[in-house]
Length: 181
Image 1 (tube, rainbow, N blue to C red):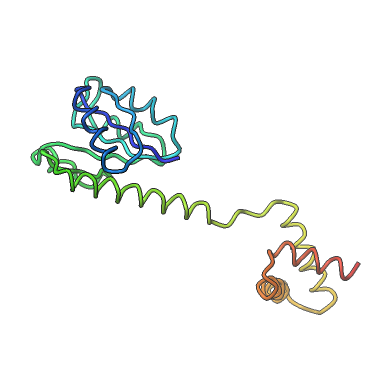
Image 2 (cartoon, helix red, strand yellow):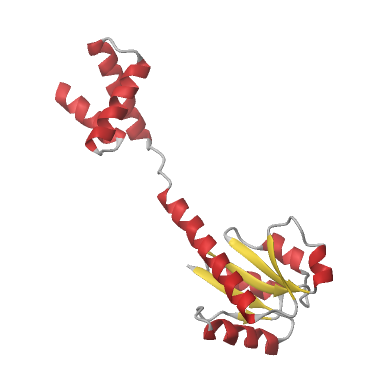
């Protein structure tokens, strides 16, 4: 689950930011006034965005950024002077005073990017188990022995059969072995 956490030094400002986000269609964001609280809230999410100010009572933005769990990004809101020193560190920056449209578009862009990364991770092919590797090796050796193929030829043959039949390579290897036995 992707979450938005608002960490601003003044609770009143944090609540205003939360209300602004909610009015613009984002899920209700937890708010806090300290970096440690933001880190604690981040543990409740798989990924997300921490919207923060340059300095919180217990740490500055760079310390918070270093401690964020994997999958979290930071949106720093600060004066242009401070943002000038905040280049090349994977932190998205918005100059103060923040325009509502800029904030909404930036948060939306960051959420879409996080969703895209999560989707790509989910779609990545899973690694093969030891049993699947064993089946593929056994099928390759059988093809090599019976059909005088090299290991590369046997591997390509299993790959092609897998693709032609829309099956995983381990399933094709299992079928190959079952035909012979």
